[in-house]
Image (cartoon, rainbow, N blue to C red; front, side, top):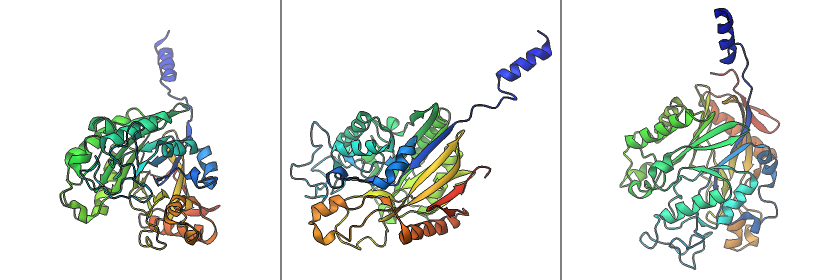
Length: 394
């Protein structure tokens, strides 16, 4: 074989002049799921208007903001505990976790979300530790039993920080999940991945996980449950920072610089705008998918706007987001049936997302477009969605 012919053969074998096969994936990213009772017990078709979108997804992601009760024991909960009310209040010391009203749910809640098509979840948030190690372990087992890939919790901190991977049609999606929250760092850091402000070792550990995922996956999601305010700095392990919003933004950009394909944040009940950083999506807050069981008053949460949200549908081609569509959601405050129901049946029914319509849909989309404009992102409204085409953007 001549030298020139050998060079030509090597060039073909290494891909020069040959177009690689194109891969395309539909990813749906939902807001945080806080579901205390299996919705099928109260609704005939919960999340019904969302099902066609979820059915179309190759990968559907949410944050599982609950702790599953063990099937073998109650993880320290008394027999008379009512999860939808958070009563009786359980001071620390009476059970493993560290909040007064744990979101302690039956395994059926995980099965319900999996049945909708959610196959990728974060289990790192400020309620992951509500039942201590017992609840973290039971949540992991429930996810595994329902073929849900998860990140953010494990038998130890290294496992909790490690990337998780899901493969669909030859495309691998990686997930790293962490919480920056109002839990105490010395309690949660054993089995739940956390990033505390001012704790460089947390940042370094998570950036290394992103680099690892970028070396093994075609697309990498970094999820951060960001639920903290200035009052949470005392005695929690956080070091004060001048501006929490800017701290989150700086960390999100570090994550993308380390190799993440997108950053997703939850924690606040309201949504924020979309930033495109180096051609990649940065979502600080996406709002909620479900807020079942918040206090029963109508109008009690107006300041935090939990009853409006967004569902994001992304097209990923060859490892890059080429388009994003945001669907407006109505999370149903329950005003129309509040007077007809006692507290428990009311709280069980309210707070589940359906696609918003008419004036409410237009208002949500316009708010989202205005919030995104502050980050230099221009979206348009098309067919009841806020749309952004990223192909060619840098």
